[in-house]
Image (cartoon, rainbow, N blue to C red; front, side, top):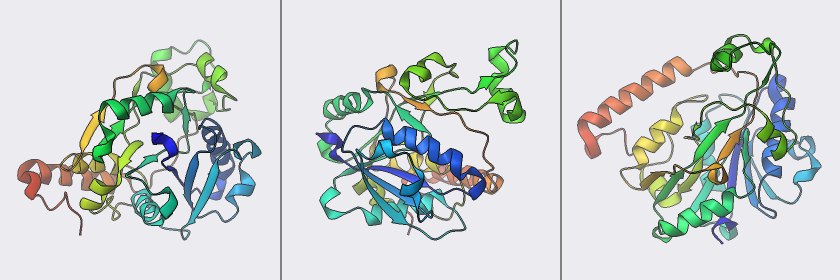
Length: 271
């Protein structure tokens, strides 16, 4: 079965966000197939004591990183270095603290992998994602402006988490998109391009830049699937992205250089 491969998370939060993040991680882990091999990169020494006991069906490996100067890209590179030999395959699945998986998601993904001949070791798969919306305290607020309002006036919303998949189905969702930063990642092409851009701090848009770079060495497939092949982004209060302006400037400059120079661009293969 394909999904004996590691399912991997990056979990590094400040104390004021830690409790809510642990609740989301517990829900995400509970939605995985039983006996999944899970790797979590974290700077929280007692993480397993903080997450719900209902995720103990997973085989969890903790990868420690030092607190401070968070870089999601650097954490992913550290993750690849730390994969245990017995779990090492040609792929890993990069998940997210906030992702809940449809009960048939991994069976659907396995079917896609076989159809696209995953044995070539060069398949990068990104699947549909639905943003589960928080419950608005103003029932008369038009749905079309909920996404705008929740980012600017978060106190107008109830951010409590759905308890299971049935509750997710009863919630409002934003328009379907893609989980660009998650999905199946091929290890050989990742190594060939020198990993993620570890010089980018904090979050975003390291995932888009990685997808643009790896497509020179891998088959990048966005699957236009149904609910069964989708993930669901759990609602949470907006998180601060302290380095977003610098990161987006770096991202734009990198894409411009790649567009002009193609495979000769120094932005594709990191030394």
